Image (tube, rainbow, N blue to C red; front, side):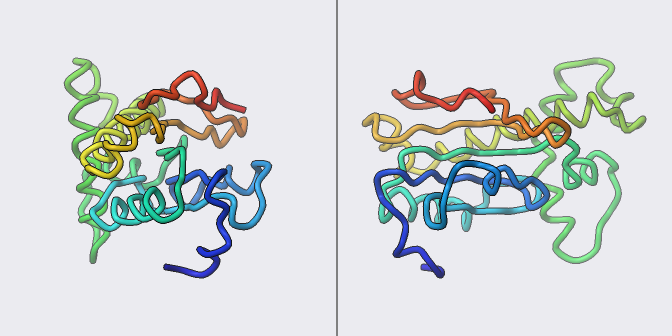
Length: 183
């Protein structure tokens, strides 16, 4: 299933989902084959992404799935702009509408902040999108079974491009006490 998959060590594999611009995996203390990474702009959970995560859980025996967004996300910025985009980009941006709607419903000033391109609004949507994508991962019966059995932990976090820290915002699974707490 992809080059190098057979070299992954089952007992210490972590699945990380991160947008292409953020590179915390390369900064972590990991070697080749220690981390199974699925990357997609906007940090969205499509059926193809879920299938890759299920493969990692079933065949590679991963213990942690981390949904990792990042500050200043260009895909979220694009979604907040409300502009139309060519090709399949529009479909990708459409996946972020739920996170935008959730943030919009939390605040009466959110709509104005969206129009002004507020950095605070961008950060709030990035965080909400991570939470939403964690929920979408839980739709997988394979992932949910791992969470229920205590053999899998699902972590939602945001990588800060300015300071290089990973801020955990949500954890699911029985091993929550063992969740990464940031760097």
